[in-house]
Length: 66
Image (cartoon, rainbow, N blue to C red; front, side, top):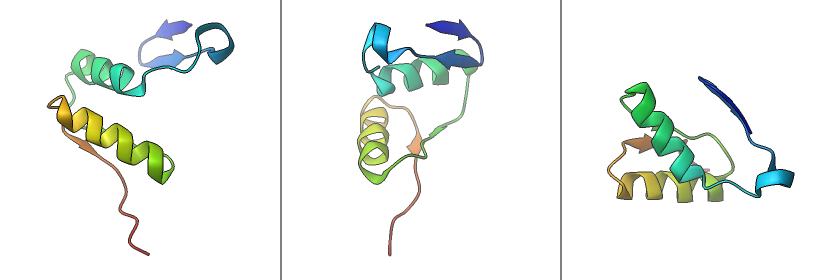
């Protein structure tokens, strides 16, 4: 893994799939951010936003209404 803020490259061959909620929550705290925005596919965005909110992190994603 290469970790030089504000970038992180995750080698899934070496480390497997990361826990996105852990990574996002850590980045949120480290940066002193006001919120997290996730732009991914609908399933991943929904899961990540829900988990971050469960942890008390303000999190948002796009609205799929069509």
